[in-house]
Image (cartoon, rainbow, N blue to C red):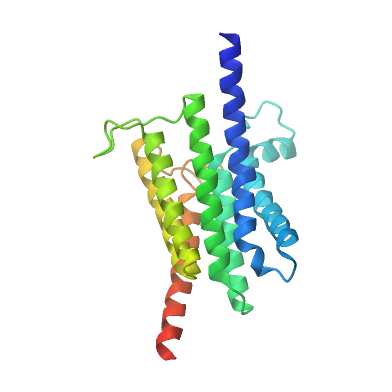
Amino acid sequence: MVGYVATRTGRTLGYRLGSAVIGAASFGLVAAPLLPLSYLPAAVILAFLYGFFFLGGAGYRILTAVTRRDAGAPAPVSWTGGAAASALAAALAGVALTLASGDGALLLAAYAVGANVSYAFAKLGCLEAGCCAAARPVPLLARLDLRVAEVAATLAILALAGGGLAAGLPAAAALAGIGGHLLVRIVSRWARDRRPRGVLTLSGTGQELIPLLAVLGVAMGLALSGAWSSLVR
C-alpha cells in the first residue's frame, strides 16, 4: 500500500514538473527562429524565459509569503499564477515584437503550444492525484471524467495549432491554440464551480482567464492585421 501511494505521488510530481519543463521546452522549440542565434541555443534561452514567467507566477504565493516573512501563510503552487504570468508576458512580448517588425504571431503560436502542453501534463497530474474533478455534469460529457475530456480536448487543440504552424500560418495557429485553451478553461471553471472571484492577483481563483483574453485579443489583432496586409497587396 505504501509503495502504491509512493508510486502515484511520484507520477503526480513528474507530471506537474513536466507541465513546466516540457511546456517551456515546447515554447522554445517553436519560437527559436525568432532569435538571431543557432537553433538549439535560441530554443534553450526562450524555454528558460517561458519557465521563468510560468514558475514565477506559479510560485507567487510562496514568494509573497517569503517576502512578508510569514511562515504561517498558505503557499501552495498555483496553476492560475503560472498561467496568468506566462499569458501576460506573451501578450506584452507579442505586441513589442510586432512593433519592432518581428514575428509576433510566431511568438504567440509558440505560447499557444507551450500553454496547452503545460495544461495537458497538469491534468494528467490531477488524474494521478485524484483532485480537480467536476462539481457538476457537463452537457454531452456527463459520463466522461472531466479531466480526461480536458486532456483529449487539449490534444485536439495542439493538433490544430500544429497544423497551422506546418502550413506556415502562425497567426491561425495562435488563434486556434489560445482560443481553444481559453474555452477549455472556461468550461473547466464552470464544471468545477470555480468562477473568477476576489481581487485580481496572480493567485486569485480563475484570474488566469483575464490574461488569456488579453493574449487572445493580441492574437486576433495580429491575424486581422496580417489579413488586411494581404488584401492591400
